Length: 127
Image (cartoon, rainbow, N blue to C red; front, side, top):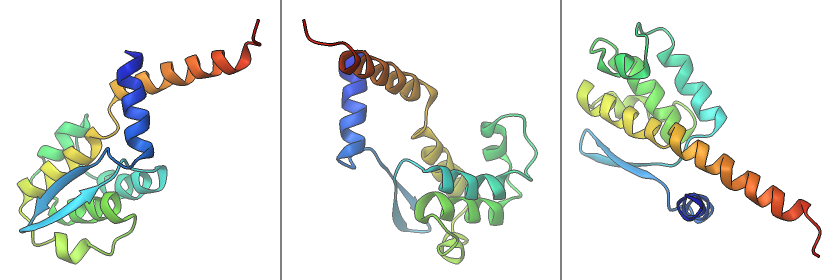
């Protein structure tokens, strides 16, 4: 587990943990989202009915909200909205799913375990 967690941390530092998605024939790189990007995307997705994020992504009548949210996750603002609006609902929902996969609970738990181990190592004096 520690080796995998270390790989996650080092790949994040080296900007190696990303997803590439294709929408309307254009490729976009999605880096792990920051709190600002998640908040921007969440703003647009919050009005969509669904008990889980998966149910929200399966909603087909929200192409504009999906375009806004995806622009936030890719760029950190709404500058890609018009461009992404040319994508299909499936392309947009798949791209959103890929973006949210970058913040999986499993990886988060591994990072917490690694951080705890590092804290323990630095807090203990050498003998």
